[in-house]
Length: 141
Ligand code: HEC
Image (cartoon, rainbow, N blue to C red; front, side, top):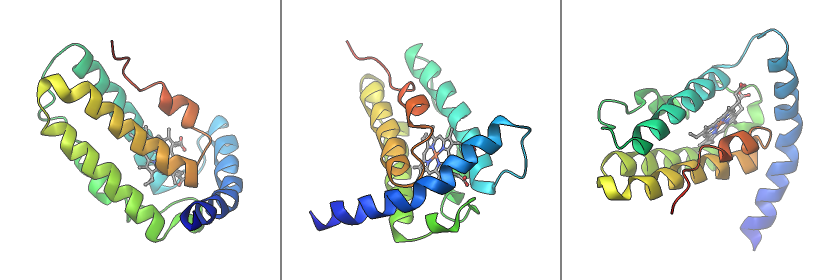
């Protein structure tokens, strides 16, 4: 319960910064932060991972090594920096590592867990792109 209240406080603090970011990026790409650039790359690479999994190809060699720099990339809004963000980064990277060591027949479920951990962090720090991120989920039969 307490944690929930705490998170909502963080959310309301963080929204302003991220909304600003959305406006900026729709114009000419001005001074994107390190984290924003990393995220754009990550989004592209996640689409690629999805395509690989859906066509039953081999994921190996496609691990985005730069995610190791998630916690140290400079964000647009300094309010992002902190324990909460670090915990969510770790959770995301953990799920990603699980994906790369998963059996082929578990990859779709595991990929969706990865996407869920993107969404979890975005709920707290950057709600704008959530709709786009949700589209990454793989439909399970
Ligand atoms: C640990 C938290 C966290 C995780 C995990 C995370 N994001 Fe982000 N994301 C952010 C923050 C914070 C920003 C705002 C970056 C900035 O403005 O500096 C952002 C920005 C973005 C953007 C907008 C970039 C731009 O400016 O054009 C996209 C798209 C995005 N993330 C997609 C993803 C996807 C896809 C995943 C998972 C594969 C993901 N994110 C995982 C926190 C996270």
